[in-house]
Picture 1 (cartoon, rainbow, N blue to C red):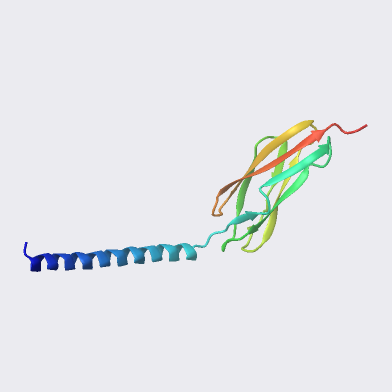
Picture 2 (tube, rainbow, N blue to C red; picture 1 turned 90 degrees about the horizontal axis):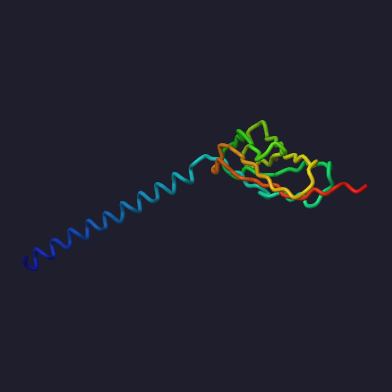
Length: 144
């Protein structure tokens, strides 16, 4: 291969490399743009753990998990599943619009004495379609 042919090959490779880099940048930009235009809700909880602390037997076991839809589309919570029958949960019945705050109520049966740790699984159409929430605490015998 002579010097002229070698320069010609390098010039073609250089143009091909530039074209390849431009193509990759263009595809990356389109992907980023598509993600920013995506319409999806997002649940942002004030806390993903509710600690009851120490409470007396048969006291009120109702607590709430507050959250905001920080996404750009309505969120529908389809189900809240609890880890045991000693815990009941209720969810918003209507879609939670972007910017709105709502809550999930949880009611733990405080008849049993002892420490507890239970989980709730929130299922929705949000960016994270399954979220785990947790309740903890300790039930002590009610003073006489």
